[in-house]
Image (cartoon, rainbow, N blue to C red; front, side):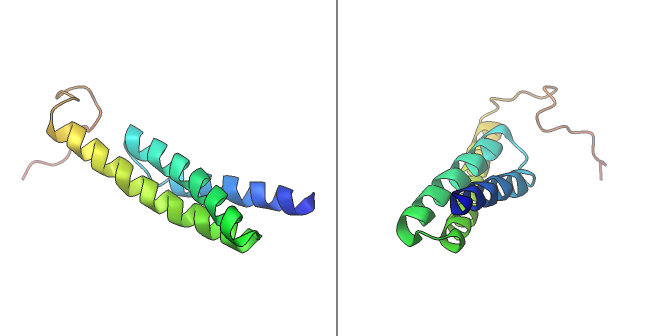
Length: 94
């Protein structure tokens, strides 16, 4: 029972740590789903805590990049119009 608790705690910690680095809505979702999926696959393959945490990290990174790509594609297609505060344009003008 303790092992399952440690696995769940490690997976939750990995998700929260990696999700804090994301910025767009698809990137946040991709990071979380990727980390959980990676943790499940890592646990199924390795069956120990290290493989679960490693799977969560790898899955989170892959999900983060997939979500980032979707956010950039949506931004470039103007699904988020100017002034919607999705990507604020209040930075310095050079």
